[in-house]
Length: 310
View 1 (tube, rainbow, N blue to C red):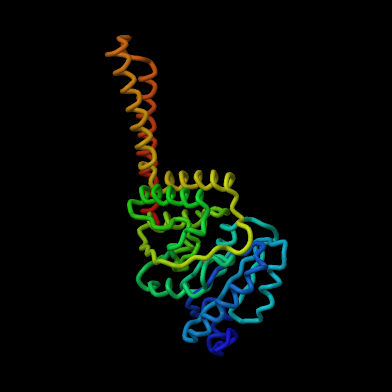
View 2 (view 1 turned 60 degrees about the horizontal axis):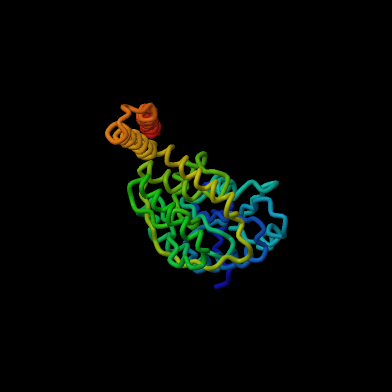
């Protein structure tokens, strides 16, 4: 069966929005003309072997300056749709465009740079009926640089603390999610590479189910778009913002305890060892800790009421 094979009935259902498409595959693209054609061809071959499944592939060209869009247009296939941004907005913005254009019951997000294997799409689909979101956890992280491996481990630990469960791969961009669920959180997603972390914490905090399944990842084709210093600092700030947004008390309470403990220890040192009474610095630290705790408590109530309304 060739990549072009598709049943006539399936083709008709794909051409009409909202008429029972099973899965939408969203692929953000920015200057990936070296590999986007091969990725698309492999995807079509995989789906051709599943004629009972209706699908669409949404390629979101995020203002590419190379021939990425032309490579996609070469595929005259009813399941392939190209949506273009007039200029480069960001990887997360491309995903949000894909969410808004998806017509399938389920949506698969994957990269076009060769890291994700099209055959693994069906590993995610195996759990689609049981879970609201299924994330492909990368088994082989040796393809990453050392600093990215360390950073991702820190992010996983922090995110696990925020949501109160084990996070196996916070930054994996290869995931399946019910389109209805993704649409609920599209306004939260940043325009940058940090959308996987935001989506993961949003799903868990809202009480949806999450499944991790191992996938094989390959070394990307071409140069990475992620800038170590700029994107690393931005991602850390987004993680902190997400933590404050979803579980504020888990961020404010440790900070409050640290300040109160510092003030109390300084008081013990100044009073019992130096013998100079209660120091003003201790008063400032302890009062500040109480204020921060109150802010966290109020923020926690606001977050609870927001989710209760939803």
